[in-house]
Amino acid sequence: MSYKLILISAIFVFAGLDDFVIGQATKATSQPAATQAAISPQVDTILDRLEKAGDAIKDLGANVNHELYQIIPDDRQVKRGLIRYRAAANGKNARFMIYFDTLIHEDLKINQKEWFCFDGRWLREIREQTRTAIDREVVAPDEKVDPFKLGEGPFPLPFGQKKADILRNFNVTWVKPEQTDPPASDHLILIPKPQTKFTKRYEKLEFWVDKKLNLPARIVSRDRHSNIITANFKDLKTNTGIPNNQLWIDVPKDYGHQVEPLEK
Image 1 (tube, rainbow, N blue to C red):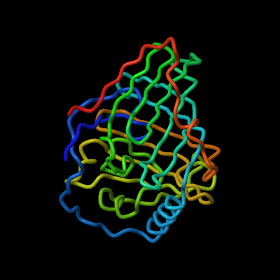
Image 2: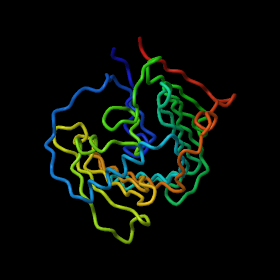
Image 3: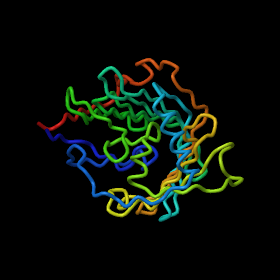
Image 4: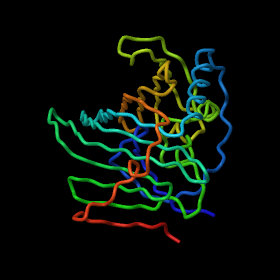
């Protein structure tokens, strides 16, 4: 059964959080097989560590510094906040909440709150500046999906990705450490392979994987529209038992509230 999904052209790291594009989509279809280039021992080991750490995650929280740089017209915006994530379990889809409380733009620091919550079915967006809330149904009732799987879901997050999925869609290389790297991290560059959906979206992605936690400490994406997004994760904590009330925010009483269910 096909259903309408909200295609988020910039959700978190792989695009910005401000531009929601609503369109038609169906469940993931198979892609042409991409040529598998030989990978280095460093890449093989790092991706194994990344997948193993992701498999062990039941929930995760981190502080986030999210920067969007638009080469044209040379505009930079920085948002600071946090992410909380709970993996799929017991027949329930994965959930997340992303919260920003600070915007820095043109040397101005603004206390501006935004929430993006996904409960496995509904995506809730709340913006303090406009005093509005929008609920969008992005998964059909009782539908079991992995909304975070690389290349399949509308919400690709940098945690819990499978090595095979990464290598199927990208040529991956290891980069020698530089002074600007996050402390004790491995740097990978991911170039989309021809004939994959990612080659139309991105010029490249970059991961810096923390050597102790084996989780991303920094991710950079450069898309085909000259947008560069950098996300830095700090104070990463896993499997702390994040409760439901830290993954979902009630709509304030005096906010405008719009509900957009899936089309039948």
